[in-house]
Image 1 (cartoon, rainbow, N blue to C red):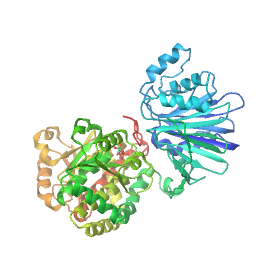
Image 2: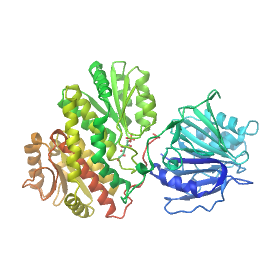
Image 3: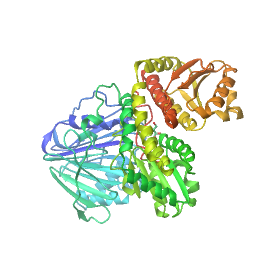
Image 4: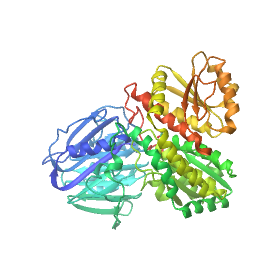
Length: 586
Ligand code: F6R
C-alpha cells in the first residue's frame, strides 16, 4: 500500500523520471500522487489527487527527488493530504508507506513546540519530528532518532534540501535499493528502475540507508551500526513488468497462466518433499491467507483431504482468537502473492515466536514473508501488477496441489496433471471461449446481483469467481455452497436472478445439477460453467476436463468475466476503486 520512489544522482535529472517511475508503482495505491525535488533554496513539491495518467512534471531538474503514490489511510483524499509532506521551513520532504500508530501523541507534542501542520496525515508528524531533532542533530541522526520513535509498520524516505541527500528506513513495509551508474534508486519494489539497473538490495527490517549523490551508507536504525549490504542481481526483466501487446496487466496475467501454472512443476522436488516431511511431523496444520490467497487456502484444503491430509484454512485477519492454539507442533503454511500482507505477517511472526514451523508459499521475491518463514516455496509466476490477483492464485494452488499429491506419494502424477493442464488451458483460451464470456459479461453488467454456486472444491472456487466480479466490475456477486442454498439463501432467488453454477467434477455433477434445477424452477437464470452441457443451463460456458484440476478453469472463466465486466463499463480493470495491491496496513 502506497508506492515510494526516490533517486539520488551525481548529475541532474528530470523530475519526469520520478513521475514515470511512480506510474509503475500505482498498483500500490492511486488516490493521489506527488513528487518533490531539491533546488538551490527550498524543496519544491507538485502533488495531485487521482491517478497519474499522462501527467507531466512541472518541477525543475535536480540531483535528488522523491515521489509517492497514495492509498489513503489517515486523512481524506485531498491535494493537502497527498505526499510528499514538508517540515515548517520546507527544507525537508517525506514520503511514507505504513501507519504511524502514535502519530496523535507526537502531533500534540510538536504542536506545543509551534510546528504548523497543513494536512491530516500521520506522515506529516514524522517530518516535523525530524525538523525538531535537526535543531541539535545531523539530518541522518535526526531521521534515525525520529524513525525509532514511530510505533507501527513503516517505511519512510526523507529528502534534505541542504545536504541534497535521502534517508530511508524500513520497519514493516518494503524498500529496495537499486545501484545504477553514478546514482542510487530507492523504491517500494524494483519496477520503477528496472530499465536502469538490476543490481538490488532489499532493506531488511530495522535497516536504514543514507544516499548522497552516488554514495550510500547502510546502518541499523536501532544501534546506528554501519554494515555492508550484499547487493544481488534480480532475474526479473523489464518485459515481465510491462503490458507488452496486451491493453491491461489484468488480461496479460490471465493469459500468462498458460505458462505460470506448468512452471510450478519445475520447483525443486526436494523442497516439496521437505514440506511433506514437515506435514507428516506436525500435529496441527494451518493454511493461512487473506482474500484470494485465503480462497486458495480453502481450495487446497479440499485437495489435501482428497489425498488423506487433514488441514484447516483460516483468514489471517480472523486468526487472532485462535492464536493460542499454535505451538511448536504446529505447521503454518502462509500463502501470499506479495509476502507483505500485514495480517498474514502478524500471524506468521506470532507462530514463529510460539515455536511453530512456517512455510511461505509466496510469489514476490525478496518479500518480508520470504525473509521470516522457516522455509519458502517461491511459486515463480513473476510480478503480478494488476491489483486483481489472477496468476498468483493458480500458481499457488498448483504448488499446494503438488504438495497434497506428494503427501500421498504421487508427486510425479500430480506434476503430469499440471503440465497437461497448462496445454489444455492454452487451447481453451481461444476466440470462441472469449466470445461466450464477453457475451455473458455484456448481459451481467445490467444486473445488480450475481450468484455463483458450487460444491466440493468448487465452493472456494465460487468465492474466488465472485470476488473477481466484485472487485473488477463493482457488481454484487456472492459465492455459495450449493448444499447451503436451501438453508436460507434460496430466498434471494427471483425471476431472472443470474446464478452461475460451476459443474466441473463428475462426483459432484448429479447433486449440482439438482441444485441448478431447483434454482431454475424458481425463475433463476442458470449459467452453467463446466466441460459438459446440461439441459438445466440457459447459458453455457464450456471448459475442459482435467481430472482434479478441472474446476480451476472455472476460476479462469471468472477472471475473464470480471475483466470484461470492468471493460464494458469503462472501468479501469487494472486499478479498481478503493483497492491497492499489497495490503501492508491492518
Ligand atoms: C484479490 C486480491 C486480494 C489479495 C489479498 C492478499 O484479487 O488481490 O484479495 O489476494 O489482499 O494478498 P497477498 O496474496 O499479497 O497476501
